[in-house]
Image (cartoon, rainbow, N blue to C red; front, side):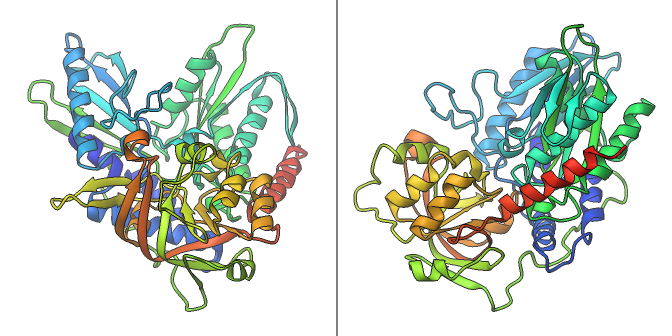
Length: 502
């Protein structure tokens, strides 16, 4: 189980590698979409080389176990939990188990109903274990529809295949770049509210290149893939020709009163593997989703290469420098940076920073890193990609004003309140490449300190970092311009256009 967790976290499966490789080159190499794909492919290689998490958000570990008659399920559960604790200790997993009422992080990824383990019997003698690590950014873009319904941009969706089609297309549109596109979706038609989502997530266990045994669903899968890639959302929501890399649909019987369409969105860092285990020896006899002749090296460029034309931001940053930036500019961050996520933003609305800490003119990074202590007792960054910024929309403008921030780094963009705050206070939003946890970890030279670690846990603590050559793209500037708003409007217009097709 430790081997399964480690490989799932660090080494993307063959079918996912092929899908990403096929998408590289769809957009010009020097476009925003092209630069994002370059960083993504480079990050995939870096994760394997370092046997480290592809993305710092290792999500809610979810296991699907097929066990033969007479197997000791309680022993299996204990082994899985022990492996989870060890993988967390060694930095293969980020401690993600948080008490829903107290906000306390368990620190070892164990908690009430965590990890998630689905046991099912089967007629074979060996044990099959599949694991999916689905981060919170893409999990938050899951969506469920109850038909009949009015679908924005597409009109009335009835309880039929056309209604299902409208739901799925809208699900892709609403994810934008917040789910780290280009993504994959699993869809469950029918069931009840809970089993529908379960069915949708199970579709993500199918191979990207398989063909649905149901001819009508196979046709719909292909149609969704073609139409979704016409929305021009593109990698990271930067606009581009590749928005969706896979679509898998399953169906379930339902009760007459309900018709649910449930969509499970998965980011490009599509981490799921499986093993067949000998029940006597406990040894792995077969790896699943590993194909002969798989693409071993993914990199097609140097990520976001430096041209010498970038603007370098070193805190404290002046308002004049910020006002000179515009959407589309590439900036390089050097020097001091501070992480801050959900718990921090909520806290700072009601409290001040620790005494002696002044970050006016500074840069805050929406990031929940994976951290380990070395032998000297110093923290080292294991993985540190951006988290989805839209969760901080209720707070961000106020936090910018209170702390005197000049730049916010995250992924997926933010909304109108933050955009107005950027313009009013002279700040910018910088989009880093979502999921590129190794790519950005290599830019962090040193952890200079941490606050709120005991209260908030590793992902939510305020980490103080020293960075060098940390590349980002300005997607919201101090003049009221937002690339995210532009892509949203243009993709919605395309959604409406697709909806009018016969």
